[in-house]
Length: 160
Image (cartoon, rainbow, N blue to C red; front, side, top):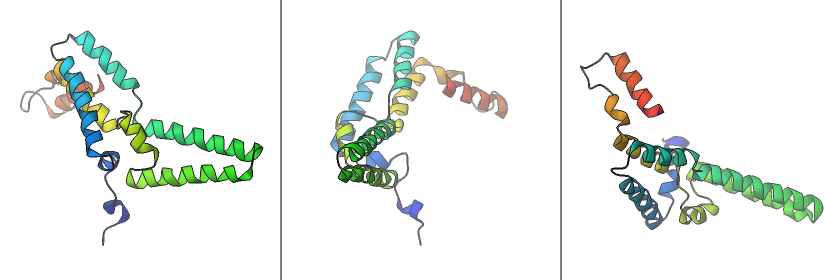
């Protein structure tokens, strides 16, 4: 018998698997166009884009803020207007749990259509730009350096 974690979608793919394929494709095309735009750009231009990618909010961060704001609003309204508003945080956290398990909750389609990406989608663009900039060219091929040197070079290239 499969465990619960084996029946649920992988964490890194759960939002994309629950997003309309056309929306996923539009997000992917936008990322691909950005990489294409920077093909042939100098390292400084690519570096500027990489800095913007580091600051880009992924879907998880947007949902966390959304849940916090709506829950706080429900608590405030429940304390000052009517007790029925106390149901709002309950609903928000139920949907947040659904998102944690399945990768979907009511705000996801809206945020995805607005172009909010998953961390995996952002990292895909980031690694493509790093590869174009030559960050991975410094990693020695097998047999050209010790295993420790290769690992340190690979980790350094990823950390740049």
